[in-house]
Amino acid sequence: MPELAEILEALPLPALAVDRRDRLVAANAAALALLTAGSVGRPLALAIRAADLLAGVAEVMAGAPARDLRLRLGRDGAEHVFAVTLAGLGEGEGRQVLVTFRDTSAEEVAEAMRRDFVANVSHELRTPLTALLGFIETLQGPAREDPAARERFLATMAREAGRMNRLVRDLLQLSRVEAEERVRPREPVDLLGVLASVRATLRPVAEGLGSEVRIEAPEGRVTVPGDHDQLVQVFSNLIENGLKYGAAGQAVRVTVRREASLRGPAVRVEVADRGEGIDPVHLPRLTERFYRVDSHRSREKGGTGLGLAIVKHIVARHRGWLRIESVKGEGSTFIVILPEG
Ligand SMILES: Nc1ncnc2c1ncn2[C@@H]1O[C@H](COP(=O)(O)OP(=O)(O)O)[C@@H](O)[C@H]1O
Ligand SMILES: [Mg+2]
Figure 1: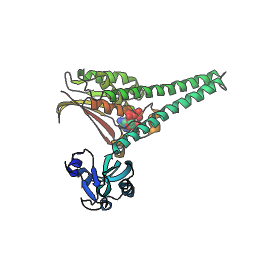
Figure 2 (figure 1 turned 30 degrees about the horizontal axis):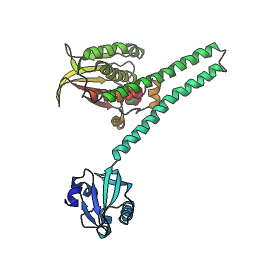
Figure 3 (figure 1 turned 120 degrees about the vertical axis):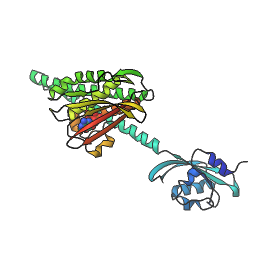
Figure 4 (figure 1 turned 90 degrees about the vertical axis):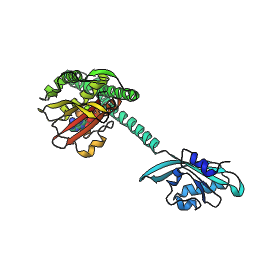
């Protein structure tokens, strides 16, 4: 029969056992890492400061059925949440209680993110929907016979419906990219062709702002393995942001260069604007869904707050890197590095 300590060491979770006198009789290395001053042979109460846990152990020792509890403990300097299971082993004087710990922090974070996401989507859809409902009511009532008001309201309604449409389009795009993220796309994509077509599509936007998009690229073709439509998405989002958040009348510069990356030859595309720039405090969160520096401004410009989240996922799917460099008051540069092989 193997020793208890040996069995605990073989478990994939932190686990320890306590005897009738509340002493730690065995603990695997993962459990010892959770204990403050614990060592085998000493009382559990000295090893872990958690009144609930000690009370639970006492009850199970006295014969209560196995039970679960939640416990917050520090680990590597951060607080983690554990699902702890207490189970009695054996009877009488030799009875022990086996305590196992499962770290559920990552699950809780994922669950909180999911809840936030649903709340954000609902809020983002509700705002234009409320506006639409209001205008419909006005058109059915007070503005019924007023052709000038009708025209004005219909124009606003079209704008709000367009906003909802873009939001749904971006949400679908995001979920599609996330679902495919593990499959690296491999069709050869003509990158300069992608950039030229994005520039053509965005020309009216650029002209409306008195700006332009300038592309600087090496001679000849630049081909990367990828998904053509998704790379169009990446550069439309980045160039459109450069135009929207850049200074009016200032060009957005797109530079393409070959370079050596950690994983072999790669293509580096920089999209640089001379706009207001981004405060460094925002940079780490900028690619989160719905994160905006100025929500009012983003909405006013027709943004959904999902563009950079989509960009990040597409670049990850291409096994590339996205870097953001920005100096407040001077402008921002979004750098995409795509492996050539
Ligand atoms: N080139 C840029 N210059 C300054 N701020 C930017 C730039 N690109 C993005 N941002 C900031 O990042 C936020 C998120 O961008 P994005 O995900 O594309 O959403 P959207 O453009 O729909 O607001 C924007 O709301 C803006 O605050
Ligand atoms: Mg955007």
